[in-house]
Image 1 (cartoon, helix red, strand yellow):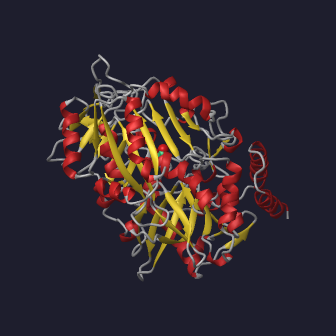
Image 2: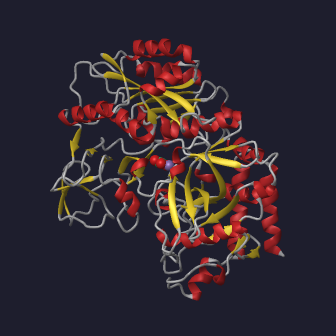
Image 3: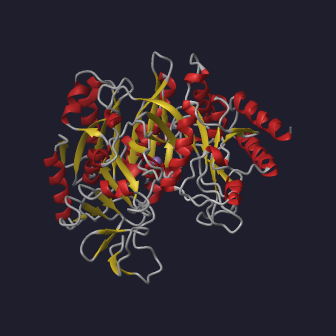
Length: 593
Ligand code: OXD
Ligand code: MN
């Protein structure tokens, strides 16, 4: 939206939503503290034990509002074909009036907060400005951690930056009824709506995470992916890490993995091989752009972590645990008797706790104490392994991109693509096997999630693939990042993981680093280049020859089935670029040779 329309838009939205008050957020620490304390007094949050977890708070959502709601998320493009087969589409002519009705009076009895924010370091060429209007003080506090927000951003917008208008309401007006600890609307009234042509976001009915912190998935992925398609950059669901070898040389590596597949863990990894260091630039979103030298660079548009708490411990992710020792907002975790946090997979299990539903819980209970999607929100600046480049508007040069999902079979531990097109093909085939954790008739089948972007592409997926190929135009193959398919999750026939993962993934990062340096070998296989045992640094790791062979096995029949399935997947998407079919055929021919 044109920056000159800012006040008009705010007034119009206030007239629609009818809040009792409007508050322009200055983004200060005082404001943040005050809002949190107000929520404690209103029984919406608890302050954690200051001796154990200083300046930290816990919130508990309504049990019906615990995660992103993909079936209530819409790409409301003017034409259905522009949303493509992977998005929910509603005609904006139908959706807008429907949502206007919902927004009408939705903020009665509440304050409308005006949050000026920017995704990306201030001054980055592809930084995107936004204004979120919300009636949730929880959202204000989380946005302050997750984005660069406040008065100074409003000044920049007013001095001439167009912005993405983002309207949000929890959908629980207070006309004559008391407030509840976590207001939200019933599922059938929830709408997480994107109007990509207008670069507009409307979110109604949920206060949780990616549904409500509109800078994150809605702006930095869905809307930015569309802007990027038009303006020549890419908005990707990727971590960014800085890997430094014992000689002090660094490279930046991106990684696309679906939600809850360990992006935060990889971005914060403590290497088990001596002398190597991993520092964090980002753990969830990367924007990729080209500079005059023809090379690809990345920035992290966010400024904080909205990480999955469950499973995080000093053993699995030391740096994350250090990051959340203070100044953290927790959501849907359990609370110990001494008023600290607990979740399944943390280092010690308490005998008794209060669970995320605020009910008494004991160690013998069957139900987990914390919700599986319990979260921490914390500033990236609290990461002990923060890379100094995290706030650099110039971005970081991308050496390699990892893609991967959870695959119990077929996919080897690591495979290097022969070239960029082959790498894009690898990204297109990403997916995870459907497990008993999902209610489905398709257990064992692969659910494809290309580049982990399935829920986040704001336009037609065939054009998304085309955009990858377009990005390489004008760049020499050797200047493009190398793409690697990794799979930390392969299992043996007893169902046990073959690879220890976590810190030991540094062994794979080291091979990738040294491949770029030209000092490491690998062998050519039908599906890509793989290390032999002697090519990997496995010192200090007990890995049997059988396990190694199993980790890198290319089962010809399984791969032929995989390619057939992938072919059918491409067909189901409409006209995907010919380059993908070409790569599929090349792999098939190499397998049959
Ligand atoms: C996600 C997230 O759901 O990062 O991917 O929250
Ligand atoms: Mn994510």
